[in-house]
Length: 323
Image 1 (tube, rainbow, N blue to C red):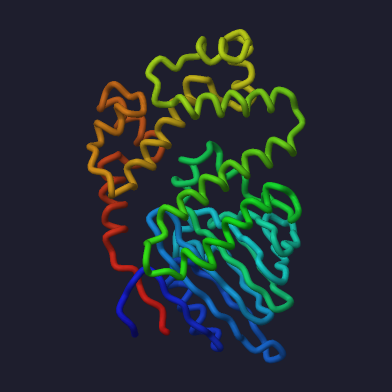
Image 2 (cartoon, rainbow, N blue to C red):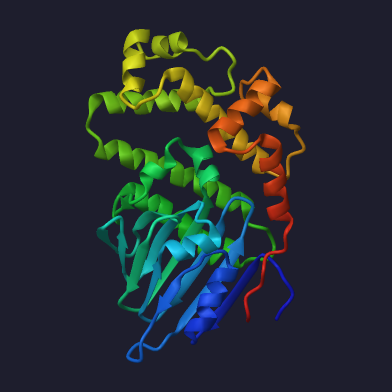
């Protein structure tokens, strides 16, 4: 077995070997093959600070994921599939999508899925921790099943970025690739948000998305309040509360949860040396004890314990795949 690093690529002709390699790379799947379609798959992994990147190519293959797989890897991530060649029949949530070259879909690590590749294929997948996605956009799990079809400006722009990531950044040892993956995720968040807006024609939903974007840009402003938000959009505070009540949340709760999500993202970044109190203050919490209670109520773990767990996980040496 080679020395460990954060990038590895290998070719597989044995189903058990590929199952094991996928688990070592951080995702549990069943690889289903038969005598009529011998396994012939090449996979590559790259681990970065904000996502795991998986590139896959090969002959017709099928993989599936269920509850027992989630128990092995926790499933606390969203998968972003980008089809580069061939097509994938993707079954999730009782629905089937056909993902064609140049198309993108999003799947959830804690939900059952089935991927069938009936012809020679090439694809890449970003495995992004849910808390990282939450830092990009609220209610990120609502984007599960999103399908960016080929030919649109959004899919062309994002596809060019993902192709560059797979063909150049992820195979280079000259730079770690973290910055490129981070920029790609920001573009992905913007593309998914715009895609959702275009599919939803409810005028009040469109207003909500504009307000959401306004809040997101000003989360670190201490004077962000319902009156300033309403005034910026030419509506009354009462109407503003109505828009949010349709989503089962108050304006204040929304702002607080979004600030907590940004704090959670900051706590996962071991490259920063800010204290927990400094992070809380940056995102609008004036009292450290109140922040700690709010964080634990939202995520079920204290900020201190969360940071220790993330620091410990990132400090572990990533397992290597057999070459």
